[in-house]
Image 1: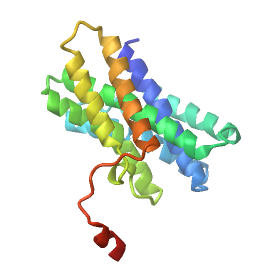
Image 2: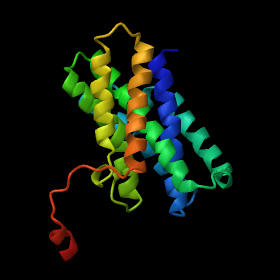
Image 3: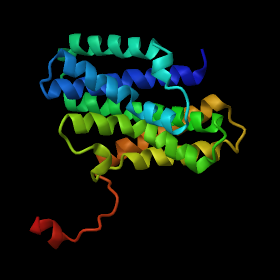
Length: 207
């Protein structure tokens, strides 16, 4: 089993839990919980594969479908153990975007694409599932809010390609780059970092 397959599966687990927690927070039924968990997990990867004109991963390898199903069932069973739902949702979502950023970049490299496009693919892989999740749950997608989200993925991608120029092994490059995504996201939320706003205080108050 390759390291990127393991990362892909771990990302699927993280986003399955993230989707399931969001659906349970919205008091959805079992079908709704499974659907939200599923689209959160495979939405970004599906978009990536379509853009690459490649076979959609989860349709060819049912391992991902089984992982999503099992993870969602466990999330439902142990939902009471996740006392701090909002913190749990944030944690799993952050881990998910870090892992999926690395997977998307690797897919782009394997397709022989330029670094900039690979970083874009990694960011889309990481963020698009969450966009679908939030839209279906009637929320403004995290990626469109003030909080730094996609920017963390982009920074992780940039460091990935910078580290390729060093003597580090691929595993270490993935670990360090993924950690950067997680660290930037955690710091952004902890210290309320955000991208500059184009709106003045007066314009915001008028709303």
